[in-house]
Length: 392
Image (cartoon, rainbow, N blue to C red; front, side, top):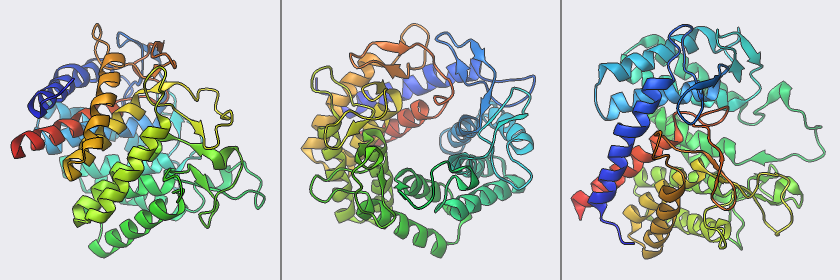
């Protein structure tokens, strides 16, 4: 099927504003204890009240971002403030490290073992500071960002369960999130610091994690960027690789670096060709570089965020390069995504499908899925196609 940019723009806009955001506005606010419920069933009913810091901060980011970039709706700012107040009071330990999860009342459940809690706190409070003008929010954002910089070489610190020295590996997740996070923080950072961090993260992503022969992205490599032939070393995470490539494209667009844009597009297309399920359609969750059985038992599931990030990357890649292969892949991924993930009866999107594309879990939110990838993907694709329609 052939798509018009104006039609796509309208589809993404209406789905975001009339379907997805209302679902979270209606169902996720915890007016009793603060923060947000993310464990929502198909109809939006709460089935667990634990609060996961990643998702609390991601929802704070979403509503702050919409307020900043789309419409100064007081209801959106109120929802953002509701989350920011809870997180500022409950989200960190005495040393300023962000917990992984809390109970409904905000009492800690899981220690601050994960650097990504701090990453999403920095993202969220940066956007919220812009929306609210609160100096304290700026301070929280910068403190969390400094935590990320301090811990990037040893993300789990004392909570790292691997034995030191035997198999030292570094993860793509750290530089890729730092690249995106730093752009989110640009208004709070000195330009020299920002450019240095962007230089370093792009260099690391595009050098250490890329297989030079296959043009694929490893999930884990040795500290010097070498391949290690083991479960972790052979792991290909298509969604992460593709998401990393649109982060790189975003930086390259800012710098008007055409060579880097095309390099990122090349790798994105390589990953899609490697990660696409030719039998049932959709993008695999995990794959082994050499075709061995993956360690992750959920390897063949089809996940919402993988497909949304691919749509963002393909729309961006096509907008920047006009390369036909980007548009062909966009339409292919669009058809699969829109046929399988949206819930036409109850709103929002399913998150987890089996390999055949059947709904595996009919939740709308849980421990990992919240108010982030769907609205962010819809917003970014809407903006991309709106610009493309205007410039056509």
